[in-house]
Image (spheres, rainbow, N blue to C red):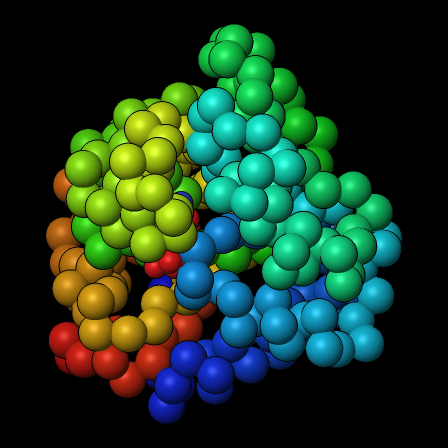
Length: 234
Ligand code: GLP
């Protein structure tokens, strides 16, 4: 695991942008993308750049169950707003949150991941160490599945919803095993609220209680942190 410590989120986003640009040059064809506030700076840098993504495939980590793609709270909407409208990919995939047939959605997604293996996966991290929507306790060999979100994740995500009672309770997410298939992983974490999760993920015991700790088992991971998120790293 390589850790890059940056002064602030802007510098961290720029470091991630540089890595992605390198990967693109080196021939990466499939990017795995994440939502949340953490990758926003990176997406802004991509939108402002002259990178041409029209030969790339993107595959997102997760989507809420039960909200349509044109709902501003959906991750489909988020990705269009923050990246795809300005920088179209050849094709972009997210789990279909409107399809309530879990078997179908999850099997389709795993089929997609076999067809388009991810060259480089961008990850954020939840305050409890979750990646994608893989909450503590999720098996390291898990594939794409439906999850019931934990109260802490629902609370953390309530800030994106005008009516906190409307935060969805379920999501489809790539599993930890699906994420670990990516050839390269770039984990981003900015701000003091991520310091404990980064401490446990990077230098703690590898345990399903901290989903991101599994990344210690992956051969090609770069963690990009700002000062506040890396405060507990030795
Ligand atoms: C959500 C997403 C994760 C993301 C996490 C952290 O739960 N499913 O992919 O990493 O939130 O979000 P933020 O970057 O806003 O702190």
